[in-house]
Length: 388
Image (cartoon, rainbow, N blue to C red; front, side, top):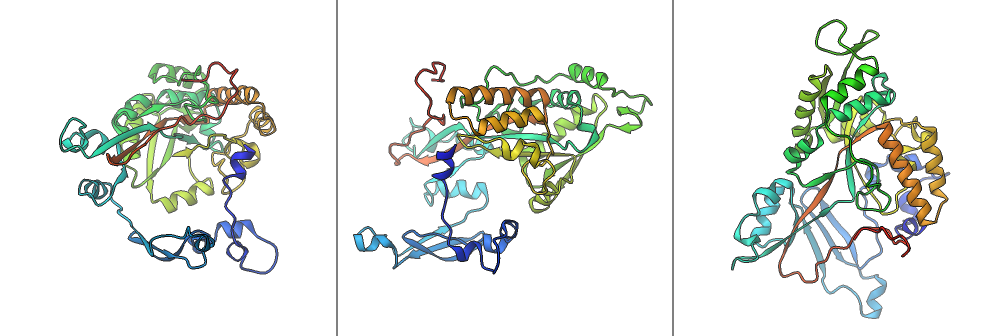
């Protein structure tokens, strides 16, 4: 963990992160959006111009230390043109204007069945590359909302989300359903834990055990006078979420749960998230190789505005595991702790863990030595169950 953090740090000049008198204010720095748009570096090129959504231009830097050693940049200027729409990027690839792009699931499935992607064709130009992304998506339940404070209810909600169906329809089947917070192909992810299956009957059973029934016959579950109705916060331009939530709404309606969907722009979404002003959210986390669950799951972050523990999850046992994991360096013990933490979250279901989507890429066949490496941590040889 220490090696990963220290070797990924980037030094910043003082005038960038502190342009005022007095003590450094981290919150002020984080909220200084104009300053955070600045580009800082010490490489062979200097930033020249930026047209938002259009172009970024870098020019050769005369003061680059490598110039005197004969390793200065060969080009006077680098220009990066921004192509925003995925279909426009795809056409630019086919026309030869760009050499590599990330593909959408739809493009991978429906637009690459052409001779340019067929190694047996004389028109063959592009290779397709696919691998599991080091990330996972999830649906998170705000623990400050009384609807979601019973783990039986949260588990029932997971049973009502048909992840295999959603993966097939919304993501073209390009991914894997997951059950926990670690990268699915790492040793920290416990493959003995099977994701909860989609089951209307199991969900009904758990909800009844938690006291939720349709007492007044209006088709919506209720308990102590409270209706089981909530709002899911959805990103307005997310094609995946747009396909996902109608499926979830339909299945939850079958047991008497009403979901409203609130579509908002990303800037509004972030504000609501940071202030914890939501019932349910749907997001994703990118994962490092050596993860530290503290930021997302520790109780000390539950009531902090703007924290990554935006669902306000609090669990004493989870805190103990997280704190021990932070000071444990033995790989075997770290794996055991992570598996224990994975099992705890699986039982508590503060998130419905969804998928690790596949990373999809197209690259010109002229590129040589393109290889994929397993994203596992380095482990001792005596851990014999290292995946092949």
